[in-house]
Length: 520
Image (cartoon, rainbow, N blue to C red):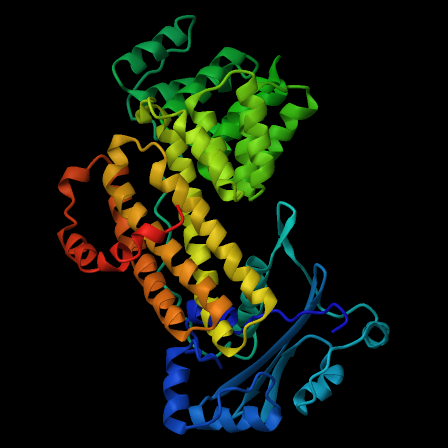
């Protein structure tokens, strides 16, 4: 195959189109329940891996598709060249296409599957004079993130389809809005006279003493406007905003203050911390680079660098940076972050060793670190579930060394997360949601173990068991998120999870019968 590999795009495109809501997508895949049902009723073959034009027309008519989108791609190293062609009326009339490689796809549509060689690619490149459409793979650390790359291509196509061939169709996007930001601006109360004389800082301290943070912030902003080069007011404002957990505003203020400060490193460190709390890794990396170019290496800098690496997916580098910070003076937070890095890097023994040193530590003291790690773990948990879900139908069709290796990586990743969740310290306020997380991660380990076993042995029953375990694990996410939000808002006692508890009791058998063999 001359080093070329295909990139799976169909399910990603369907999801992107479904989010816009102009059409109801149906994927040519046995993983799509609607397609699977029609395939069974119509009794048409489902084993085509590279259908020709006649096959596509036949199936499009049988499923009653008004539009048919044929997608194809190949990749070489980090470069992806995707092609899409949209037909209307059972694949009989082309109305839109993306990519400039159709002349080279004639063998594909005739059913003669063969990859393009380097000479053919160069000829086509010369013919189109650089107008071919390519994507560079997204990188996480040193690895290519093909999942995110596929989503990027799919969302690009969905946007283009919305603008052109589907422009007359109504848009019904899903209502998936993020929660509102908890107040990035503070409204000045009417009729209040603020102190701007030499007693201004005392007035701020008095406001903070009585718990009136909002008015103290307003006072500090006015003081900065009057005395823009007085560093004391900027320092106090950043501190107050951080104490109020207004991290976005605190980061912006710290970045503004740094260029005019005598010691900009302090402000850039605060900005890095706050951008990480907001989940904005790119801006955190930019602020931290300002520290590094000024020679601001130290324990705090190394710890922040480790958190940037951890959030970016470079887990081995994260562990190394936390080790440098710990050598200069360990803290429970640093050790906990390093344990998380070891777990995600596939080093459960080092993870356990770090967590063992935290046995006598008051977990309440690492609550912020716990929240940051759990946000990352929840994303990775869902991503691992998606990869495993998509992997099962591929293994049912054909087991390859690459797919078996992917199943092994999914298992190793699930085990790493499970180790951290199972024996890591938990702030008491998050005890209830963490209990749900433990069960969900055990189910994920069980599922990935069964899928890996299926890849090795081909036993269909293990694939069925892996599918069931995975479904139960992913269905727990809404309950986990609801309980976690409740705990964060301090209203855990007012929330009732009776329904979820009954459901959890009904699925305990999924874990108990194999719990002794779960590799934690």
